[in-house]
Length: 148
Image (cartoon, rainbow, N blue to C red; front, side):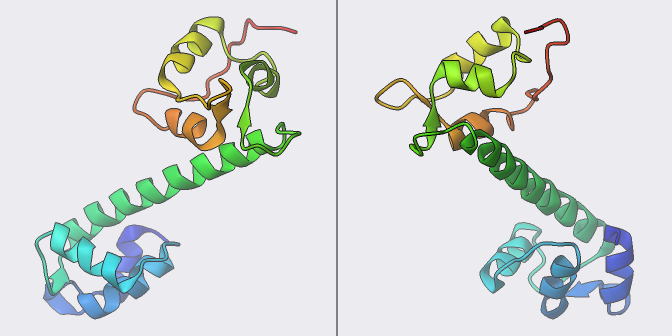
């Protein structure tokens, strides 16, 4: 369901969505907020008791963006775990290159290696590596010219 449809379903008159319905509305959008997180959302928007349509829309878009970014990090880290034959939670640079199937350019790899923290053995930790691709302007674009 869309953010606007959820708002229409849970809005209680001209005041918008009350604090008591915000948690349920968020769950309908696929989020799983705690009561503390719901209150933090209301406080962040400067609305202790209810959210009007525009504020609800902006807040839900922001929360969904954060949720999907977290899911993408977890999925990419899960993908990398498949290449961790020793179960240590990290990959060597060589194993990472193999995991990517040669699809990451040397230039992008060098830039990435400068930003990703390494373990004591010089390996790349899954979560830190995956988070790196969530930074603004980053993606897992493949190098179409790289061939094995």
